[in-house]
Image: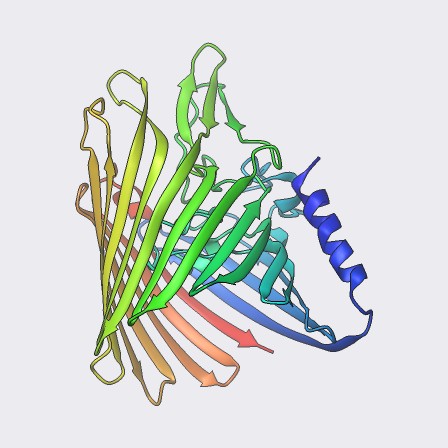
Length: 420
């Protein structure tokens, strides 16, 4: 049995069990027109139009049904060339690709309702955990799409999954239980794409994605949160598939194999404002993650710990400054390279012209590889529903680095956003 039939039948049963009368139906849409020019490569990276419609149906019972879609037409077709087979997505989570330039996707489709003191959400949705911005420690319930690497906002990179969520009070705490039968994993673009994370297959070899089966390898999780003496605290547990694959070459069958393992994730978050400064922290421990040793190609299983510490400052009028430090540590003595990896981020944002103009600079720096990504962006609200934007995404460092590998994909970006 597949994930969608199970969640779909539950969703249909909930809809049929409610009174048929709807109280209100709302529609809104966002239309984005954008272009990106890779100045190092001397070519257009994208010229696209993206339509994001949303429908909200309110029932007399208090339940809400939300549907969000996405249609994108990209003239250049450089970010995900052709009509790839989408091996990283479960069947009912895949996009529709009518041709090389057009993609259609049901982004979210879920029903939420209060049953006594319990909040229930059922369908295709995003479930967000954690306190970090962009650097993921606990926010791993939903996998990501790397179609444009990490450049777009994370809400557009996160892949919604067919899932169920129940939230209810337990004394002073709030408990959240999640079930995710959808086995979609992190989606990397294949060889030939602008931001491909996969090596070029040697010779006539092919890529094989050994993705888990939906339902039979469901993810389960629980989060307990509380607000205590000014602290926003949470404890988290998730039994899940590690979404980032172990990639290795099998010469006997001439194939590049991407496979996955299961792991227990334990962690927590803590944040508190101190005047104009807010402290954010997040820590997590994966029971098992697999790596390849670079010298022998042997597979090493090890526990991995990660944490993020962040400081946000908003004491200057119209300014916002945020800094984060991220470290991950592999608890194994069998890895010949460094057992820890560190990254730091700095975000500076300023509003001007009565908040009509927003200027932002974000820097991500990898301390191990000494490479970086700098994102510059300016948005100007011409009218309430019309926003112009321009910016740059700049990669620096050696070609072997996290960011430096995409040096030639540094780009200048312009766009227009209409909401209606």
